[in-house]
Image 1: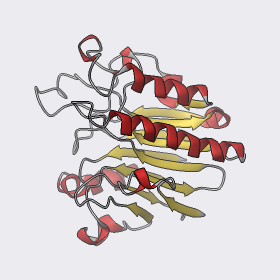
Image 2: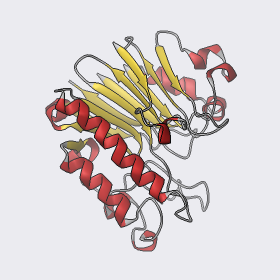
Image 3: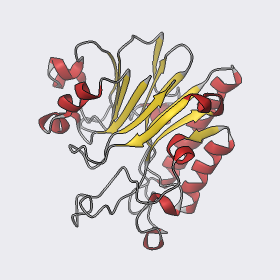
Image 4: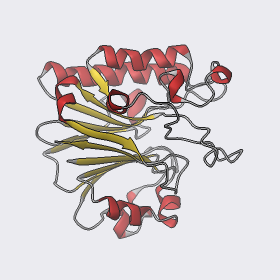
Length: 253
């Protein structure tokens, strides 16, 4: 089973840069996108529902902001939007889809902002979302979390850790939340298979950063530990343009 996740930084902009070509070339079972920045009615039919896929959309109340969508080749048994907390659900950050032997969360985690103005909001979201995941684990459900976590976990996960110690996205209190997810039985699938530096999923548009590979790894596939034996591959696709993020891929038995 192949799952793809990509923060497209605006689905309409990504479509003009060849999003659908990559989408169909991947032939994924599930394709999750974050930061859609659009409502369904604003999109061409092929973006709203590509041939061969069912689609769940969760758009923010604020126009042109946030938003996630999940394309599934096989229609999920159930779909839910948000996490049941009005503090967060109006921003269109979460879609949960039930694929039978696991629940998949497609998530666009908040950005703490350069001035740290939304840091408290971000950390509260981490807490509320983890509790939602643990409710399912207590019920015996397997869980996959994917999307833009907006945090690099370890120094190996960004090019310049020393100069970014006070930058949101690499603050100690943000990184601690990644530790907490792992301590609660989730596995960072990429790091479980690869502990080499230089692998990133986001690059600023400035300073020719992508060509110089000055990036951050802030997009993840995490699985509950009972699914870890099924992980065959977990990797990113930095060669794929169209956003300041690149797609990431998880292959399961």
